[in-house]
Image (tube, rainbow, N blue to C red; front, side, top):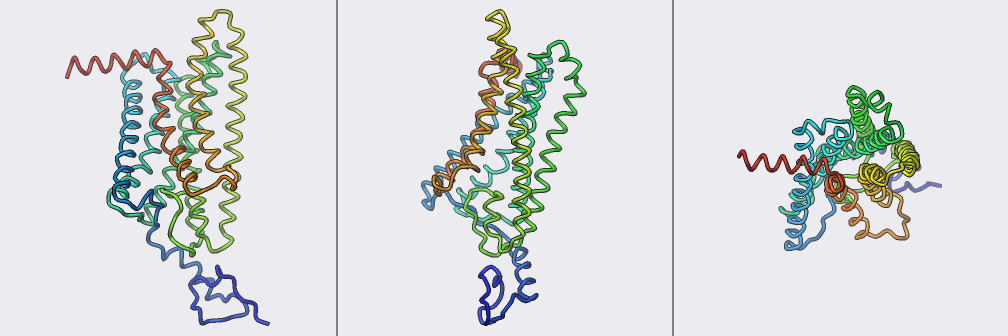
Length: 340
């Protein structure tokens, strides 16, 4: 008795051909389908031209705000010699990563809305996935390092210069960037080695691993699932390290006798803690929310929040309670107006 082939195994095989088992020819056809895809179709926000233009201008405003905020932080820290300390060195790296992550996805989404298209090339999708993973993973590693910086500054102030010298800071920042690069390289190579045959339409406004894996027509996507699980394990380890660091920090701060000292310690830690909470909560809800609360509109809204909001708000959060940074920024702006 002939057993019908599953639809995934028939990908690329003519409907008139029947067989009791998948033939080698069918497998070759299936594997070649991923290379036959020359472009992907991204999820549009709307089909109405007026709303597409509204989306374009809204994303342009968010993008310019992120460029302005992160650019001012980078310029101010690089310009003011008093800010050449480990905390501000890591903050400068954070601003660079925020600029990179938002620049990876927003300009393409704006261009598609402006021109009324959904297309992104196969190579463009791979590049977008690689760079977004690179910047996001490196940023989370950097946030972990920044929690260690605050822990040493408050809990071990006498050893701060030894544990966080200029050379150690450069090595830790380089390790964060290298971690992001290796993570992005492994995930991108693994994801785009999976044969795709179901469609070329993605249910997301930028290229994302889960949406690409939905197009897979074989069980080879399980390799990427295991790699994702390992990455989640590493991210969870970083999160635990951050939590334990802040438990020790708060215990040390509460033992400070003067109210002014406690206020100063909290003012240097709270912005980083808010950034970590914003970054973690948005990403966790995006990927760990139960299917029962999932809907196309909610998924799109959450993806916008976790990909656009942190890079835009981080400069404001980091500078809101930082008097040194605000003072240096005022001097920089005043100097620019006085010496055009």
